[in-house]
Image (tube, rainbow over all chains, first blue to last red; front, side, top):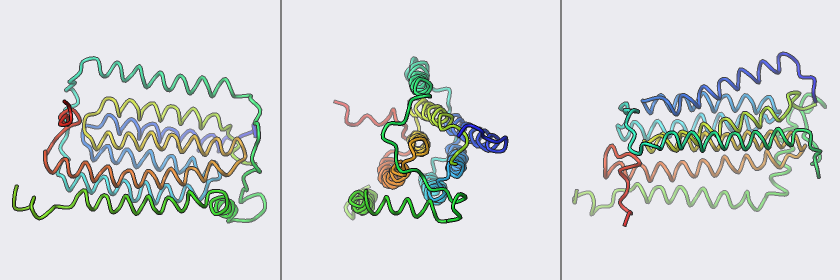
Length: 187
Length: 103
């Protein structure tokens, strides 16, 4: 588990640079459309990291659902609202907000990083059965097969509930954004 | 042999991504950009989930990521619907302007 090749480090660090650069673009761009494009960069970098961790199915879902559907939805709403003008980032209603936000986020990062470094050599208690890798046994669908076995056996009830959640979300959104007849001739 | 790179690197990357997302959420005033920052934080958590699944040798982490993605999709749909109906009523509103419920 320790002898990573140069190529693996290259993939990891270039994808990490993509992720961080995209995230910084999201929070610093004055134009919301540019923020959405930075989000695409970050999401794609995360998909690359998923591939590097042998989570092939999740990488595909990440690209299709996040970079495909969710960012398109963001851009669609941006265009629909016509709020795609640049915002002035120098406006700061609460003076202490940015330093406080920096303190809070740096504190979060420091806390998690400390926890990761402290538990670096900790033994894994109660490990799972291991993750199947496609390259090992020639089974190219190993990841999908193992994931679906887990999904449809241990988590089948939660899986059913997600369908309820999606129905509720879709119906709720249709009701939320609908223009009612009384509103239409009122204002 | 999975992920020759130590999962700890992925955990640190996830922590940094979460921090950037949290900073953006606290600083930005455009509701849509705030929403994108929430997506950044969710992605940091999914990255952490997959890294820990690798470290523990347990596929359950990847299954959890699938649920996170479904919930994130539903959350984006509902959230954008709410933002859409707010913006329709008050064009160009920032998060600071939306204080209608304040007593």
